[in-house]
Length: 201
Image 1 (cartoon, helix red, strand yellow):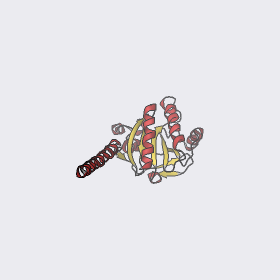
Image 2 (tube, helix red, strand yellow):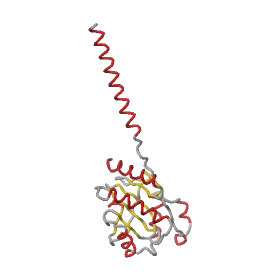
Image 3 (tube, one colour):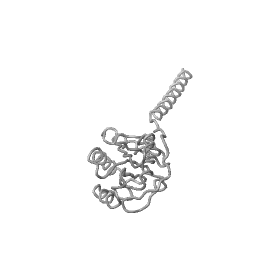
Image 4 (cartoon, one colour):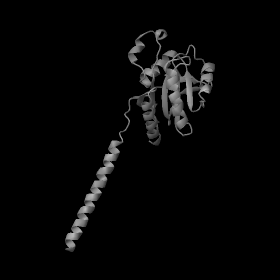
């Protein structure tokens, strides 16, 4: 009887341990890792406070990237209203920043970007509004952040006008891990969750 009792105790102990291992494994499996979609290529732009910045300063940070222009009356105000909410959520967190690229560098000069950034309450160290060479800005959108079709670069750069409502999420290693519709609340909510996960990585 004693042997039988010990057998059952041992059997159910093994069963319990096995169940625990399976549950832990399944729980980890359900936490699907965000895929690596692209890698941010080297760049050199100028932000709203006239400081030159590159991809090197993004290293070790989780970054949200977007493209906009200051005179936009359509999707940009909606995008940046949502981006401001993301900024306010993470502005005090170490290792987080936003980079907003102008698609209209001819108009969006440093003073114009500074005024726009100030209207958003943006700290230049945490939320960059950048300008630079138009071809370089558009190349980054297409090849680094995957926010536009690379085939669109076949036209003369002076004839191009990039207008996208999507945000790109970049991890601490400079890899794009997600693309989100910046005017859809549910996608911005998912972006917020994914930022949290990447900060913990």
